[in-house]
Image (cartoon, rainbow, N blue to C red; front, side, top):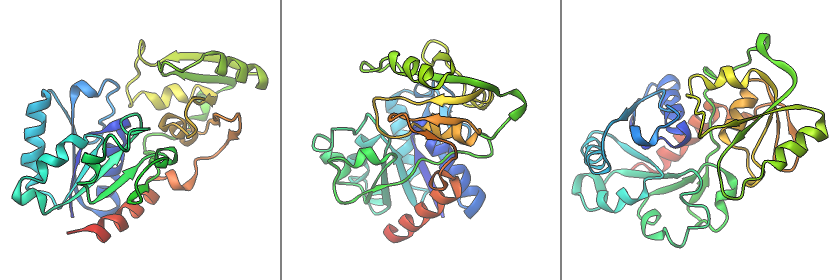
Length: 264
């Protein structure tokens, strides 16, 4: 099986493609634009120094050579693909990852209707979604994100400042106070950390305080769990172990079943 991943939101495509190759021995490739990869999330595949038009043309050319086209967030390319005779016959998967679709299902219907399958990365995105939408849990690359117990500091917590308009830093401060934790707030926009360096940063702490304004675990929270941290989620509940549905083997096998069911 040959799979082309277009886009790499939150590094999900890199993780899926890597483990599809590792477990199933499929030929996989990920392409994204370097301008969209500020945190160097493309650990598997290519972050290309292309403008949007050149990137789109390359994606269309590469689509001729692959069995399944798995598109991450870049829904506007699908109507173009459906006009090209060879590509329109292929299976096209559209995978949404967050703000691109949250609360915008009706507005975006002209794009997702043209996909064979629509996936969402968190359960909250199913709100208002069409019946064809399927929740595919975000996978964590457990080769990369793993415990480093020798550097972990007891009773220390980290909170990632996301920079969203509705974000309040009083939330992590109050939570840290409630649990008697020393808090470090990391501004991910002003001090970006590469995906390769993130495991070492996370492993400095015992706790990760997740965002409060979205009622689903962030991908970084899942990565923190894989590193052995305890995660305090939006409702102040403490999660201590990475759920099995977020292990890469689970995601890849579930996705394999979806692919085979919809393969044209």
